[in-house]
Image (spheres, helix red, strand yellow):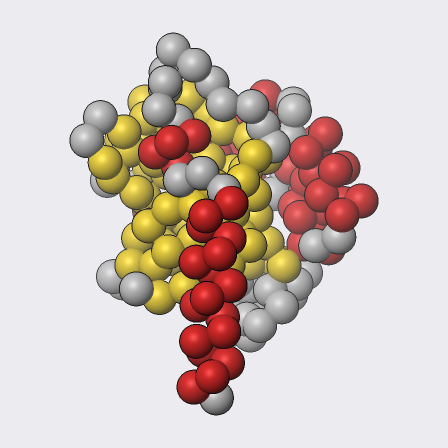
Amino acid sequence: MESAGRDHQAAIEAAKQRIPSVQQLFAGWPATRPHMPNLAHAEADLYETSSFADHRLVLYTGVSRWPGLTVGWALFGAARNVQPGHTSLPHALQEALADPEAVRALQFLAADHKETDEAASETLSNPRTVLTLVDLASTAYADQPRQALRVEVGTELYACHSGPVPFGTTVADVICIGSPIWIAGL
């Protein structure tokens, strides 16, 4: 078991050498918008929200802070190793899911397959869909009653939304919408 943990950490370290950090990716922000989709890694304070009707889907919301840049995270992904929750989604989240294009994007992200990744990216080219998912993530983040977990996350980013955007009690410079590749405790 200990060997598997070392192998997993080694795989993460190798991946971090191949993909940029979020600070690198957004180095020219707001003057320069990074190309999407893109890969990135960062440290973040994340919460997990499950309880979606599709138990493959999990939402991770959180914040990363650096001098001059605060990133809000809306990471939707397949719940391969995550048990579904037992609480219902807050009413505001259910309202956000009334947008059929947002639901369509989430269905693609939940499937976790190369073809659906491409379809999710296409769906998230619609600014209204991005705004709906930003609102969904902001509501989920504000609704969390407990301390966020400090983690390291590697993610595929499908879209980013310019701030300033209220995100819980934080104001984010940019909200990144993506799907996690890995989440590892620090």
